[in-house]
View 1 (tube, one colour):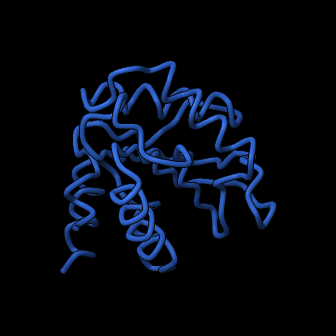
View 2 (cartoon, rainbow, N blue to C red):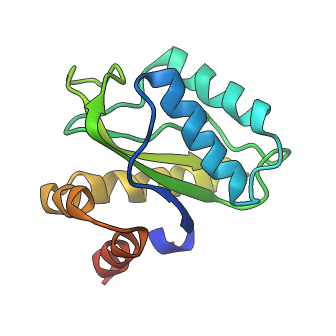
Length: 152
């Protein structure tokens, strides 16, 4: 599985408008719905919020990967992740207590795809140089190129 197989190139937001956690979740879910791979906005939003209520998906180093706890075959047609970035960072209740700048919302139809994609994203995002490149990207095409280069 390659990250470019499931990150949607045409639905990235490099300047999220959100100022808080609820707003960013809504904004990211809207991007996912716009891909055409998520059939029910309210159901996927409910699932993402339910997951956040268990434990924040804001990790360390300014990164969050919001996602439902499991696959949702009735709502998600194909594995999809959308990218969002907040230049100022925002409080996402991250594990390290720091602001979050980089977001990937992940939605999958099956548990297996969900876990594989989550592991792949997590591995990439642990690399400081990768995060720095994502923060420096000027356009969605730049982000896409960074993703492709990381796969090599």
